[in-house]
Length: 605
Image 1 (cartoon, rainbow, N blue to C red):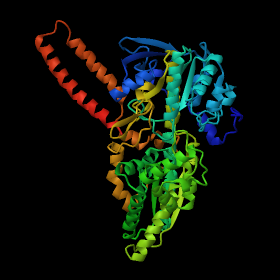
Image 2: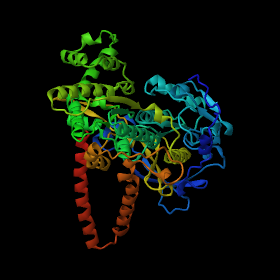
Image 3: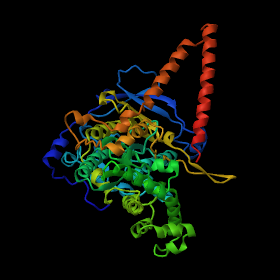
Image 4: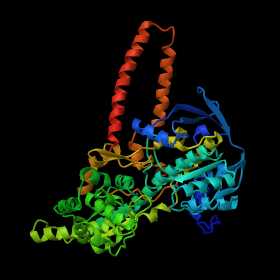
């Protein structure tokens, strides 16, 4: 928190060129005024969750969706007009510039909070000016603002945030981050609403993990960039593997518990194999199963005289392996009891001790690291790629001695791609996306909305087709349930939970369709470095383009149909029209009720 934030930077020629790029805006946000239309009130995916969430968030649950249009657009009431002043600072800069300008009593103040949550609690602010901002526009990283890993959960933390906002007389507090940060955001919004604090809290979906996805949020700022940068690195390794023809590369990718980054990079670069955590969890694959799967693939390639390859692994894979996850739970429980890491192994259950001793020493040491604040392992520090390379080498050597493997000597090279990519210059898509989200945040605050997340849909199309709006963060929350025993069901706290790879989705289906070709045919694809101009500059991630996600657009379309029904079926219409409407509506209601019940049942673990 004591770092020097906001120091003007010396830029390279490329950075200077990027700083001159002017991100685009969709038509609904052009000009100085925007029309806000409010839709129906929102609920939650699971009706039983709705009751729990409503009790926990009475001031922020059940709010309506907000849609933004040009002032001249013909939309039904209720609606309001928001205007921004003709001031250059908030509208000339993308990403953090538009997102975190703070407004005090309606006047733009050249002030921003720095140092993450600690900076908020300490009311650490930075006066901004054009000289500082000009060296950060269209650049990557969080170094202008700083960041911390603290959550805003405890009573003391929430009270410190409330005090800071009151003392600074802030009209708006914009929280940028993923599922954890935005869960904190809605908790702050609820507390501020109850305390009648004038500060409105707005969330922004920014996470390289790509796991803040739901019916309202199609993509996260940063995901496009990290996948493109990683895909180039992976493709370079693929070319080296094909050139040397003697190495197997095991590459672990950052992305936390979900495997979105690994899936996207596979679809972009076509490595020989990827093991998704969601597949392992769904099939309950053990370490032995995964090792055998990789060895079988290596053996199949050896039969084609191919003794090289590239295998991708998500960093969250280690926690999806059932026996390793159970071992981690025991270790974390003992760590919470302040048991020394040096003596933990002696206090493990017999089966856990046997597994712990079976693992290589370097993995044992890494599993003993203290867990994150959400009780997950320190995934970036656990070298799953080296563990699997070690186990695969042992198994291949056994097959070699038994005569079942006839390929050349197995040689593994391991990499972890994470920090190299997340500080990259942002892609054109991320520049535009963050810039537009910043404008949406402004209009959310101008409309006086609290506990909302800025949303943009139709993202796979050009910017001029994007639809801008805002959704209550509580509508994105779910409540996890799990059986403790046959007579007991535990219920967790409402939260935004990470979205995992949909094994029934179109992106995963595309992977499965090509898995055999990727494995055996070496159809490596190199997308090249990030493109800022030319045809490659407008390329978007594959997983965004293949999915049909325009939820907000469909909600609007449904509202239009319902409005037409109200127009046709009103007092004075014929008996035949009324009977037809009742018959159709009864059938639709019955079908939707069954589908909704099925969806609710699927949420119980």
